[in-house]
Image 1: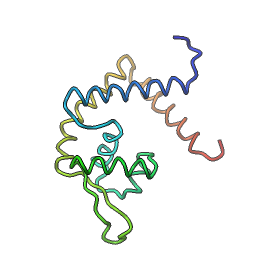
Image 2 (image 1 turned 180 degrees about the horizontal axis):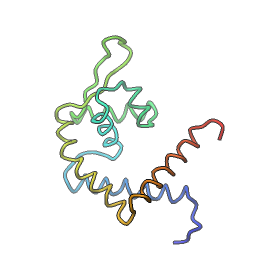
Image 3 (image 1 turned 30 degrees about the vertical axis):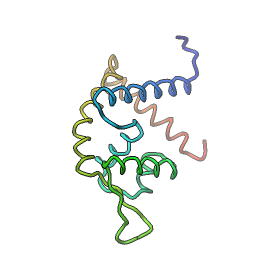
Image 4 (image 1 turned 180 degrees about the vertical axis):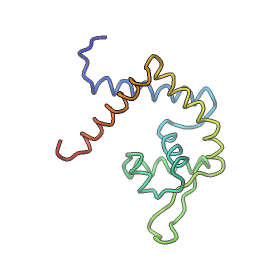
Length: 145
């Protein structure tokens, strides 16, 4: 492969391969999830109960996408959606026991899959890569750039 490939193309290509591997991993282990659904339940496992708006912000999903993902995860019995006690217009999202159990089953598999993607990179390279991605992200988040 040529070093002259555009950075954006290489990032998109890597992202597509990661999603493909996630699909394969879930299929091999009989897990009925998409990579996008995984992101949502992983956030809920880490953060606890969140409003639908908070979940959309953390996952960088637009309102229609987050609604679709939430509806699919509710149908699978992995999350619950309830009205906020203080603001009836807001909804709170949380993992169900089934969702929590699935996380316990799948998380070690995902950790191993992520480890495979970093094979051959030492700690400094991984740290620099993470910092570079964060820098690129912040550049795009800044209205001045």
